Image (cartoon, rainbow over all chains, first blue to last red; front, side):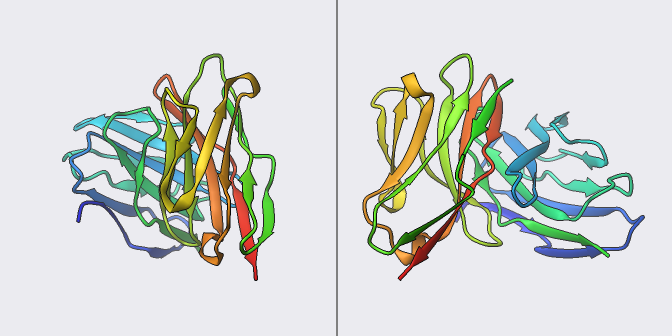
Length: 113
Length: 111
């Protein structure tokens, strides 16, 4: 079955460490996204990519980095510069970028100890 | 600025009762409109979408939504709620290649 796979589902990090969250899709979608979810704040866009080797900052990109070397993969690195990284992170993809019709992964919960 | 408002943070309904979740948007033009559902600790799943045409749209799991241009609203409805509908519901709008989510409404279903 086609879908989006995020790993790991749970991740613990010490302050000052970088961590990378994996996102892989086999839907053959061009556009991919990373969202951050905090209680009561909905979803906020971190980065998005419309095509391989190209990506754009979203609303809250500071302290995060991404790459898009393959169409199927869009990993997110949470760097030590992110001041409040504890959150639930969601990866999504879409056939056409920007319409809002998104397919989501199961999410990764990052906790900073 | 574009905005999406879900005025109800929590809603509690009895199983078998009807449900309406509210969503209002503030945009200069009619955007694409969506409702998503999220179970605890899971990703979001698309319930239904409105792009154009008939203003009453049907979705999965027995949900429907009505687009009202005059009220800038896209409310989600279900005639009879099941215990398995307990989840968080997000309204989203897409316009000019930007997608904005509301802050969500948590639905509790009591026996």
